[in-house]
Image (cartoon, rainbow, N blue to C red; front, side, top):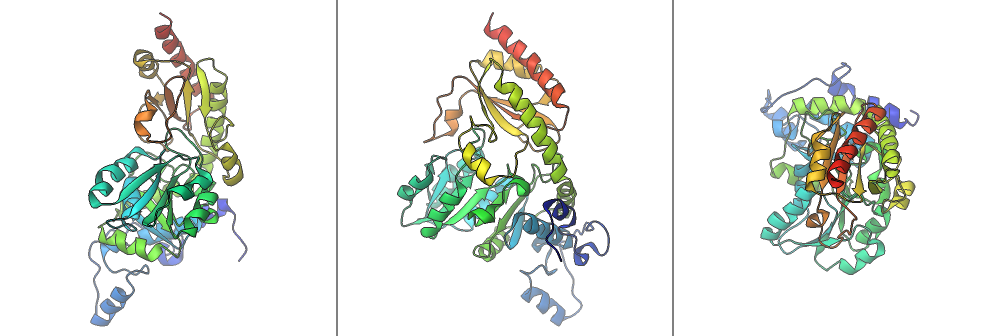
Length: 395
């Protein structure tokens, strides 16, 4: 068979007849108990329980196996574990490779719940966390200790959007036998191929672009051969499992991931360029823009972007930001992203979420997720928002 293009993989991945039973989509197989007709059959299933054999509901059904196959085909690696949310995927992946007395390196621009997990859970377990500047590059060598076991990356970083030099960081980590984990949610399986750049475990909040409709909580962790068996077994021992109905919706979302991301990208670039020219904006923090730290790594390593980026304003206060946000027509306020809808949030003190990579921004930061609405309508909505902001600041 010839090599399949990405667009074709999105449509065909995970659709083996053994999972679909000759239907177009894998059926929703809900199960807790798997029953056997003989001792021999039960023993065979038990012996093969790690290799997509029906054994026990928490190990998965054909619905789960189809989605796991699809994620591996799209993202790489050899196996995919599924979790009830993205945070569960992150915490379970880390817990699978640390023990008391270990040390991990965590990027300072990481998703806030990941930082909380390190500070509040790992710390109690006797696992030390060192936060590092996302742009550290070769300097990561100086932070590696004899007991360091994990290097955790998030690229681009949460909110501030720095793009990390993943190949360099991975190479140095492997020289010291560390496991390299990446939160790859921003890129999705479409725009960054983690295993081609040295990552061992790629984590997705599938809640975001994979599902794509803001109606399912789901996480995935795809691992290479080096890490898969340990990740799979430890995730099972931690009790991680997911609903077959949620997996079905994720598989449905996966089929339109490519076309949705293209539209998110087109819309976000148009809105971001308009914002870059506004007098209220100090700079745009979008990986596709030179004003974003690590833009050179984005150009080198990524295939495209999506709808999520931030802008830093020249000035602003709580009253003015409230006036901007409260009057939006097409932008809603919400803590997730990756659905078809546009979202906006304000952050007046980004340094409260940073330890070593603190920012000296001119004004507050706005994080935007640009959805699938008309970009012109979104721009008009933002223009009216700036009018409200300026009215407060200039009174």
